[in-house]
Image (cartoon, rainbow, N blue to C red; front, side, top):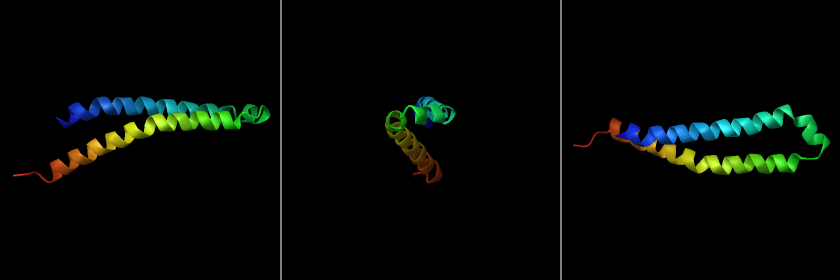
Length: 77
């Protein structure tokens, strides 16, 4: 039952992490260009936008895993 709830959410979270890592990688590879054209604020805003998209889904995913572990660890009679 828990896997039915968590697995689709986990795939969504993994895709969001991939997008977040892509933005970070883009920033690291183009750091000289960003500095040369004074685009630091734009890149920071872009990264913050991805984090705001990622965080609520991650927190919900972690909550489901925590509750699942709790119910598996302490079974009710």
